Length: 483
Image (cartoon, rainbow, N blue to C red; front, side, top):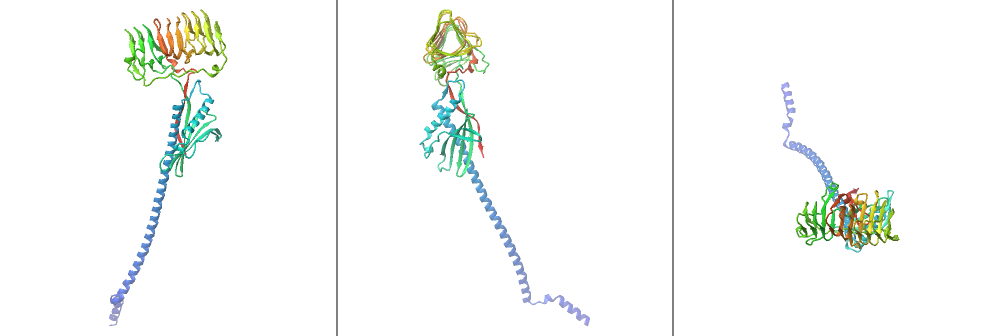
């Protein structure tokens, strides 16, 4: 019995929870539920805090990205404004060249010409912009000296120019010419968008636009006539590969006339705005081997001006007798009697204020190794048998430049002539019975029978002193940005 009692007691102890009252069970359940809710609250707080930190970080990242995007946008605007400044500077330069047409008569640009050009361009910019709406609140700066990175020079500035309506984008310009490289003009353009700036630089070079003096074998401002059996051809045409060209500004019927059996071995070009058939007249058997067409616009030959060194010098009088000339000089006229010769030795420039007349069998002779550039105010006439005797047999070594007052050039020579004749105001008449080697620019031209005209294409590269050439300011390469 005792053993059974003990088993009952152990069973009772083991199953005591079964015998708990309903109140006791509810109390224990509430206790467990409280502990679970407390743990969930802690997790909720942790997650809320974590998400709050993430939200704040994301918001900060968005603001940073927006700020960066806005800065990039402003930097792009500032750079675009700076590039716009360079484009505007190019427009100013082009306007100056087109309106003022600066020119030179020298073979090369001198330093004084290049520095003067910078000053003239500054004055032009001030004239154009001062008081304008573009820079209404300021003026173009005057030329001042500057020094930067051991380099010196002169500069002038164009103040702020606004390029949009809200006035947030703008640029300013600075033009510089360095002392050691006066042939170059540097443009510095600073673009601004709010408080962001970008600066770009671009170089322009001062160059001389060489005139196309002898691109044509023969060119006239008015009429051109070849008489019977005259042939015009060329040599050295492989220099640049361009065809031989004969041209005129004339637009009237017969302004180019090739009489019986005359021929041009190249292209023939007539004045602008007309049909070649209306201008060119061909006799029986006459022939043009190349194309015929009209110019796009009238070609105005560059003007001739005597260099100051000759123009300002004292005249040495007249040349009336045989002599040898070795130095440049100014003379009243040349008037040689029969069989007399004036010999040129060395590189000589002569300015003749009157006429040149060579009597029968007289000669103006260029010695081997010599060169003559002849500035002529009056007329030139070679009597029967007289000669322009260029012993170098190079047309570029005898250049005849007629001023506006030179009206007639008449050659009656009986020996071959090598010369470059540039007399755009003169009527040129070849009555020679020997061939001509070179090129001619004239008001009108006529070549008679029994002689041919041979164009030397190497004359396309000739740019004699005293013939005007336009001075240009041309872009050199690409712009570069300074960070």
